[in-house]
Image (cartoon, helix red, strand yellow):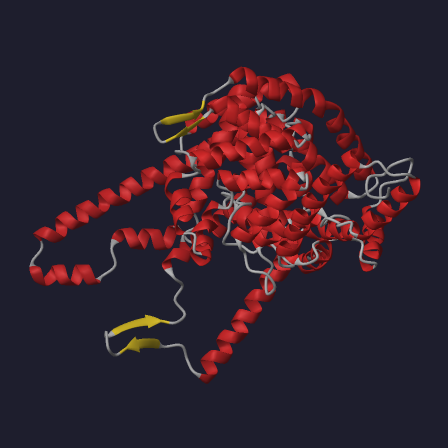
Length: 585
């Protein structure tokens, strides 16, 4: 009752787990199967409480004798059922004889293994348990087959997915160890065989008849596309059949989704975010846009159900993408933001205590004005100063004890400075970042074209202005800013932001033009100097090359922080003088 919240009892997964564990401690196979399922999927517990070892422990209680013992029980049960049926047909005794026969029946009654526990053991053998259980697909298939015979629809679905090629990246090593070479080659080279595909379709059909939602969806997809093994068309596309399955899902799932969404909302308002996320994710698998958006939002906020940060962000993006494909504007923008701000980068550890600082390191490293972060987030200076101080102290200590010098390899006669930073770490825009920028631009463009999003147009204008993943093009950037301004005027939001962006872009364009002209002039001066050096005597050429060039002198004296500071002070002084003249008048 606590598990499902039946008959007016408030749903409480943690309390349900407690009662299941009590039942399992008294050797209840059914309770053990449910307790193992709770620990396997992390139901009714915190992320750090999820425990595969405990799941394995309880599943073993629900499957006495392991797979061999459970299979033997199943065979004996089938034999006894057949004999009891024949005895019932031939029975002609009185009531006393019936009582004696019933007592003997109870004595020889055979109890079956708990089918959720059998299915759970199959899943554990698919993925393995560290230090306890190695992955073994052959044993997993035996567990799934037995659970399917016992009527478990989840096991039917799992077995069907194995037949269709689930866990294919691991098949090579697993089948090599298990010795099934022919099956390994069949799956690795040609995908599922015709017989495997037909068997999987039959299992999916049976599971779908029992109400398994994912099996229905998978079956509908198979009938919509068909299956071709080599040159033979095994299953023809049957659009009417697929449509019938999808319509049935939409009809029957409606009430289920409504209940899930209502329960998820109540749990969210009560502060039970992880339970809310589970219900939203279950509803999201049915195709509900609202459920997909809400589940993606909770994952993005850090309610990860045991996943690390990167896995959590990938799961969030998967749901945002699903909603984006169905035309959700905010989802398109969120996917673009994920890739633009580098939230899916694999070279950064977001799970440490300074995860927010690490996130802003990436976001502002891509910004044209990276120093602005210390105005918005002055607290970021503390870890930076601490790291710089520690690094300086270590450098001083190393210099006092053994100065950093060149380390030479006598065999190859090559030297390298131990303090030198690898060149690949000096690139601000790695290949991964450039690819992420392209994906971000793709989703922004989709939102801008198909949904007339002002924010998407603004982002595209910014990317074109600064050349982030797109070519730097000021006219095109202005066009996107203008489109964003039009949309902003209609909605009434972001008008000031667009005006500021257009004003800053004009200044930026002027600076870029001046910079380009200055560089062109410097190149022209270098060419003239090279021409003069070619007409001078050889003795003077050597002296000219050893001396500093005019270009280097100009760059050294103009493009320095001192020059910038002098320029800023001149502007301030000019403003003060003008202000003084104004007051005197």
